[in-house]
Image (cartoon, rainbow, N blue to C red):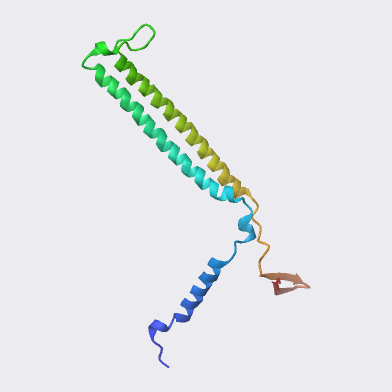
Length: 162
């Protein structure tokens, strides 16, 4: 009997398709449910939040640098605009406003950075927490091989749970 080449692996493809369908429709194993979903999914949410907060910190830092650079550009052509009072403040209100804006963005950057690093630490704790939970075999295995040795003989068996 001559078989066409393209149909030679058709049973294997159907078996693979059936296995993939069964595997995707199966309920999660007990070992997969040992850690709270809050930890399982929350660690990724917290990690994303940490990344977002660090981006916001970088943006605030850039804004602080821009304000301070504007202050310096203002002082180069006219140094009188950057004279300081005895209390350390700029005598010119425009220069003082730029300096205060720079300080405000620096405080925001620091706050975002501390929050982002704290969130990153929290995500790391959740990753470690999940990794250290006992994993053991799931309790709902329908069959498992059994090997025993008695009187110098090795026996192989199969245990089926109903």
